[in-house]
Amino acid sequence: MWNSVFREHQQVSPMCLGFLQWDQHSEEQWGLGWRERAICNKCTYKSSMFNMFKEIVNKSPGRKAADINRGLQVGLTQVSMGNAGLRKLLLSASIPAPSTKGMQKVSNKVCKEIIQENILDMRCRRQKLREINIARGNPPDIIDVKGDGSYNNPLYSGVGKTPFQPATQVCYIQAENVTSKNDIIALTTKNKLCSHRIQHQSDELNMTNKTCDCTANVTY
Image 1 (cartoon, rainbow, N blue to C red):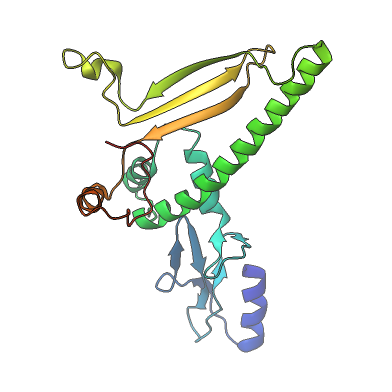
Image 2 (spheres, one colour):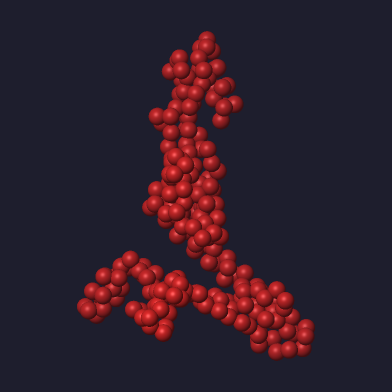
């Protein structure tokens, strides 16, 4: 950017002895990325806007996504922190935080891609296990597994209330027991949560179909 604006400033105002600086009044925030331009403190020179991030080329219409925002959401899937927690950290450090709506929009896109990649990865692992069984002389479609489930709330939250787990979300994982790696080869998630719960109840009373893109796959 600076190599470009230095050259352009010399061509536009060759006699100007001013200094180039950031135009803070024109900067634009795009998640964690920024768009900036340079201005001269003496003449009227203003550069064009420059992206301080790399754009991701996609086929969908609209503004191109910033790689830093996509990468952020990928990182959040690997740690026990969500968008709200990250915004608190950024704001506590006096760093301008992305909007909640913008972060959630990127998160929805990234999570769908991560789900598809994991499905393909587990499919490849199961295929390798079939090949291992064939090499060992075992039935190819019989795979020894071990599984365990986890809920979105701790077990002690139901003490004295119910012998069952009063959870709204559950994740059940199956790992292969054929090799010493114990790779995860299957995953099942069940969820009762949806922001349109009131609408669901109205639809059920009126005997109509659900009118939202429901995130719940288990009824209440």
